[in-house]
Structure formats: C-alpha cells, structure tokens
Amino acid sequence: MSKTVPVLIASLVGCLMIVAYFSPPLLPARQIAEDWFTIVATIAMLLGGANLCLHHVKKISDQEAGWGFSAVTLLSFFITIAVGILKVGVVPESEQQVKFAWSGPFQQEGSGFWWIYQYLFSPIVSTMFALLAFYVASAAFRAFRAKNVEAILLLVTALIVLVGQTRDREITSMFLPPPAEGVPTFIPIAFVTNFIRETFVTAGQRAIMIGIALGVVATSLRILLGLDRSYLGGDE
Amino acid sequence: MEFHSDTPGKKEAIAMREKAIATSKNKPRHFAFSPRCFYGELMHSAVKIVTLLVLLMAHPSLSYAEESADSSRPISWFDTGKISFALLTFGVCATVIICTELARRGKPFYVRPIAGLLAMEEAVGRATEMGKPILFVPGIEDIKEIDTVAGLMVLSSVAKMAAEYDTPLEVPTSRALVMTAAREAVQAAALAAGRPDYYNEDRIYYVTDEQFGYVASVCGWMYREKPAACFFLGKFFAESLFLAEAGNAVGAIQIAGTAETTQLPFFVAACDYTLLGEELFAASAYLSGEPAQLGMLKGQDFGKLAAIILVLAGCVLATWDSISPRGKNTEGQNMPRRSQWITDTVLKGG
Image 1: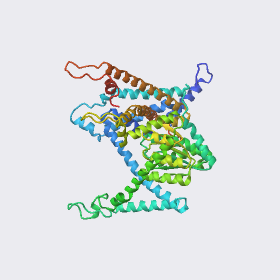
Image 2: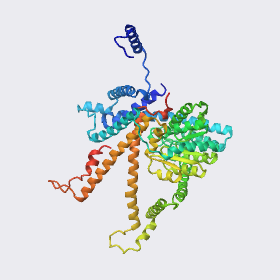
Image 3: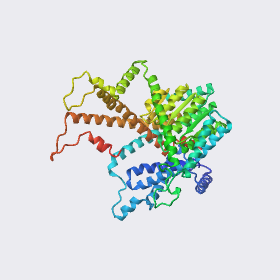
C-alpha cells in the first residue's frame, strides 16, 4: 500500500499532464497539479533544512574530516535565516505603510539579507563559476591529445571553432582582397566555424535529442504503468 | 479447475466452486501493481484515473469550463490543431506497449550492449577492492525532472551491487525530495540484496539547492574521501565539469549520463564512460534485465524508425523545393514550401 498510493498518484498526475496538453479545458487542472508539487516541495524544504542541521551537527560531534566546514555551514545557515526572518535593516518603503521594519520586503536594497546576498553569496558564486575556465582548460588538454585520427579531427575542429569565435579570426581575412565599400569583410574562419556549428553540431545534437525524446516517452510509460518502481524503492 | 459431466463428485465440486466465488466476492479486493497481471491492473488503474479525471473536470474551480458555460459556447475538449502530434504520440506509446507485451510473452529482443552500463559492476568492484566509497550524484534538479527519476532508477541498481559487496555509497542531493526518494531506493536495494543492515541514511543527505554550493560540498568531499567510483546520472548544468574534473583528479573511475546535450561534451572529455541521452533512460531497464522493460527499449527503436522516415521525407521534400519551387498561387502569393507539410501539419503541436 505504501508504494501503491504513490504509484497511483504518479500515474494520475502523469496522465493528467498528457491529456491536458491536448485538451485546453484541463489546463487549470494541470496548473492545480503543478501547485500541489510546489506545496509538497516546500514542505520537503523543511525536511531538507532539518536534515542539513542533523548531518552537520553529527559531523561536528564525530570530528569527521572537514568538520570545520560543517561548523561554518551551520553558522552561515542560522545567521542567514535569522537576518531574513527578523528583517534586519529593513525600512518601510512608503508613508502609507505601517512604520515598522516588518512592513518592508526582506530582500529590500540595503537590508541585512540583501547585503549578505550581494557581498557574500554573489562573490562566492562568481568565484566558483570563474574556476570553470581552468577546469575547461584541463579537460580540453586531455581530450584534444592527438592520439589517433579521430582525436586529430577533433583537435583541428576544436581549434577552428575556438579561433573562429575570438577577435584573432580577422587575421584570416588579411590575405584576401579588400571588400567593396559597404560590403562587410569576409572572414573565412568565421564562415567555417558557422558551417561546423550549424551543420555538423546541429545535426548531431538533433539526433541525440530525438533519442532523448523517445527515451523520455518510454521511461514515462514505465512510470505511468507502474512497471518500474525502483525510484520509489521497488516492489513491496 | 475444469468440470466434466461425468465427474463423480460433480455436485460437490460445483457447490465448492460457488462457495469459493461467493467468498471471493465478499473479500475486500487489494489493489496491487504486479507485472504478472498487467492487463487487469492496467484496466483497474485506467478506470480509477478516468474517474478522477472526470471528477477533476467537473470541479467548479476549472475557470475555463466556467467561462465557456457562461458564454454558452460549446466546450472544445480536444485541440484539433494538435491532432497529428496526438496521433504520433499515441503511435509511439502503442508501439512501446505492444513490444512490452511481446517481450512478456517470451519473444526475444536484442538490445545492444552499452559500455557504460557494463562498466558499472566493474566500478563497484574496483571500489570494493580499494576499500574506498562510491559517490552517486543524481543531478541537481528536482524529482519532477525525468532525468532525475532516471538517475534514481539507476541508483537502485548501483545500491544493490554496492550492498552485495558491502561498499559504502554516498549520495549527496541538492533537493530534499530527491533525498527522500534516494533513501527509499537505497533502502529497498539493500533489502533486495539481503543486506538490510547496509542501509545508512546518514550517507544520503541534502546539501543545498544552490548549484555552486552543492558543487563545493561534493568536490570537497571527493578531495577528502577520494572515492574509487563516481556516478553522475541525472540533470546537470555548469557543475558537470567541476564534478567530473574533481573525480578525475582523485583517480576515480567515472560513469556519467545526462540528457542535457550541452553538458555531454564535458562528461565525454572528463569521464571514463558516458551514457549519451537516451542511454540514460535505457539504463534502468537494461540493468533490471526484465523482459517487459527490455521490450520497451525495442519499442523505442520503432519510434526511431518513424523519426528516420520523417527526416528522410523532409530531406526529399526540401530538395524537391530547391530544385523546383512551387511558384505563386492565383492571388500572386508564394505557395508554401512542400517541406512545410512536415513541420506545419505532421509535427504541428509538438
């Protein structure tokens, strides 16, 4: 029973989503289902928050490797929650509003929560994202080793696409006669880059996407018919 | 039970049968999904689903229906513009279900070996030999994404293997709902492997919804614990390369799979095996080895055949258009291209 009910709910909502796509009067029902998901996910957030606290408290108490990071995580978690809930630094936005800090939005510019987001969270995320450049370089170095014919083709194609998107691509038009007035300069490598992207890359991507779409259909059917329930813990 | 007229205890047997029927009618019926009585369950669930859909349709909160009733317009229950797409969808679904039933009846289907899936046991075995944990990342999206569900289905198989070998399996999640589902999947897998004590819910935990916060936590764990095998199966975005490169740096065997075409090159570059798009969705069926699920994979192939036919038809019509344009109609307007029949009629609504 503990598995049958979730499977039934999944089947019902899944069928509703499919039918509503073809039947406009059912669109509000589809919206209701989406709202239900939001409510369930919000309740699960509380579960997630509780789990986060328990997990890190256990790590700290067991003095596991990296427990210091857990302490920082918990501290940041509680400070952010407190600043957000207590609306630290929030001021009423207009005369009509009640003259209490609570009447303003918690994300208001200049508030404590805004400050944490703007000056702590955002720079940290940007730093993490910037690291991606180094990871790309490292992965490209390994992927583009000219070990065999396929790897050489990949390397040459990658170099063309890379150069074709930089400012240096204009070097390739230096050996061509100057264009007539009003006619844009022809850049051979940019042309080749576009050709590769629009022809080979698009064709490959579309082939993969057709496969994905069919895979999604088959997986959805497995779920809707209750044939595969491993995502819920399998058979009872 | 068969009854013949010359059976000596016919009356008694009939009485017993009637008693059995009466008893079964009085017994409460327990609804349970089981592949063994597929059609009965299908009908049962279909009736329930239709009933609930009808109830939902009759619900007064459906504003569209109310508006239509007020304006005394007939309600159009079907968007006729999407009829060809509906037929295509129905055709693909029907083929998949027919292949499933054929497989259930014992028809053998060939499913090509997928290197990434064959390597899963090798990866778990390697982790066991090295005495190091396994990392499983089911993507960073919520359970409403089909990629995440596919990842959780594979988690079930990986957890079963890991439980058999008694190798620790770490599952950090970026959504609380995914954590709950992953716990269920791993617990059931441990039970199926006959090792209920293997399940440790502390190893399946929620980290954060924030993409790079999640990356920082998982990569930090990887550098500290140095897992021997990493599985990245689900929906990934920019974090794919962070995770794969961190796994590569610690020398782990890595198996990744996603339906995000933009992230596939990163996984191909940094992982040992990559499940490309549809292979991720086939993984669960492939690993389960159940005929019904393998039959579904064969059903997908017929869908691919339909796609190939449509692509070829589109190419032929587009070539025909470029060789001999259709010209103008009597009103002097350009006639639509022939290939538009595919996009505007066959695939309309998709």
